[in-house]
Amino acid sequence: MEKLVSLAKRRGFVFQSSEIYGGLGSVWDYGPLGVELKKNLIERWWRSMVHEREDIEGIDSAILMHARVWEASEHVSSFTDPLVDCKQCKNRFRADDESIKGTPGEEDAQCPVCGSKGTLTAPRMFNLMFKTFMGPVEEDASQIYLRPETAQGTYVNFLNVMQSSRQKIPFGIAQVGKAFRNEITPGNFIFLTREFEQMEMQYFVKPGDDEEWFEYWHAERMKWHKELGIDGNKLRYHPHGEGELAHYAKRAEDIQYEFPFGWQELEGVHNRTDFDLSRHQEFSGKKLQYVDTVSKDRFTPYVVETALGVGRLFLVVMADAYREEAVEGESRVVLGLHPSIAPIKAGIFPLVKKDGMPELARSIRDDLRKRFPVFYDEGGSIGRRYRRQDEAGTPFGVTVDGQTTQDQTVTVRDRDTLHQDRVSLDKLAEYLTERL
Ligand SMILES: [Zn+2]
Image 1: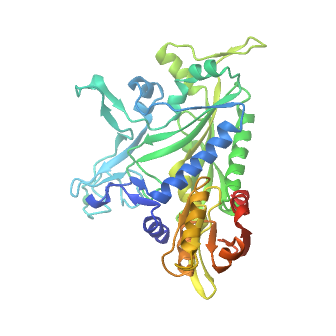
Image 2: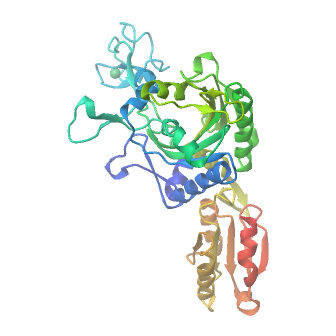
Image 3: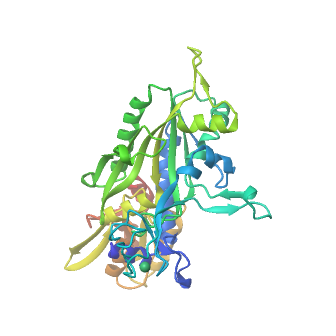
């Protein structure tokens, strides 16, 4: 895990937020390569969820929403964690923190940080939503929240989307966007962060059809992760037991990944029933129902949700792709990213900095970069330049050598097999495009 974090920083994938000021806890920034990888992951998800389907529409709702939304969704009353404070060292812990010895609030309880006894308060409920104020007056009336999930922005737009897109049930609404949770014990790099990006899809179905659609999405999402190149042996289902279910859920199942720190949730599939739409109906006074065009049945749809964190998926593809190996008597670090999500698709190298090779290589770069991101590098030995691109996850290396000036061909090196093909310049773009 430390190696991955260090590679992520060294190669410009992920930096800590406000690092020069000592950093902001569990908030991260994406660097030049990171932003490309993140964008590619989102695009791939959007394509499979929205563009390639008839039955799902996209939406982008605002982060700021009416405060009543969170009362209706029960986030104001239920989205809480029990916390205890140490009166001695002022640290705050979750009440169920395993490092606490004894019962918080009692004399025997010991603070896991400063070791004081009897200084831990009894557990108090703490809401995980970030509060802020809208308008010039800081009073209760103007207090709003940063959304803790994108789903509510989808629910309140259910009628707008259905009517404007003329969709019929069953249909879904997909959304990608930032959400915020004031987690008390976040960590493990970008696994659990206070500001994060979600890729969520709410699928509206007829009550009674919900279990069948749950099965469908649960299988569909696993397939998607495998198609992304993630090792199937490191993916599994984890059904939620009674105690794990969220207040709105009838059934929930996680797709877990075996992270360097153990099996943890990658994506959640939830049967949220008609809980959210019914609550918004009650709180807003607006009917959020559907009338079946054939049977004329009127009902409040059930919702099957798929919820995936962009940062978490990012961590999974990085961890899954990372490998160290020995080749040609040297050790190398490789990010074996699926070519479709790699930030840079090809490195372009002149073998040496003379005989017209740099000029030719630069003109190849100018041609290719109109199609996909490429990187020109003439610094250091060719072996070192290959290694740098291996670490960045670049699937192909294109080298201009002495032969190129004579017969207009280049070598194309495959990052994983190290196999080299001789490819004619007029076929190069096509050759690479086919393999991306
Ligand atoms: Zn303490």
